[in-house]
Length: 139
Image (tube, rainbow, N blue to C red):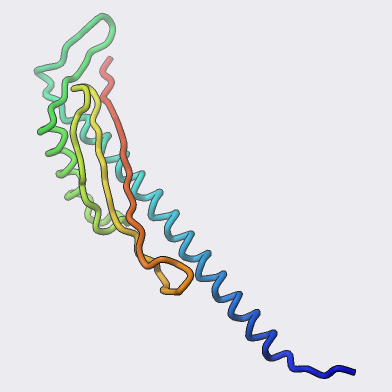
């Protein structure tokens, strides 16, 4: 009968379990941070799309268009982000806020995700970027 120790096998299994747990926790954290950044970009673009001057609304047929300006979109996006400091995404940078066509508001936000637990298997930080377009519809 062969007699051996189960200690190396148990230690290896424990190391594998810890590594897998660290990877799952980090992947979940990264995914949640990415979704929050996208939601924040969409909310900011929606607020920026409402930066039009009501006096400049043009009516064509059954719809009206509200012209936007780059300065108005940028200012409204910055105001929206500063008014919501309790949002879960930290260290968000307003990389770009403009209007590509005078009707839509485009917002680009960036942040850096940091691993909640350090390990050799997971990078310490990952840059994230979210872009969103929005427009106001007036009927």
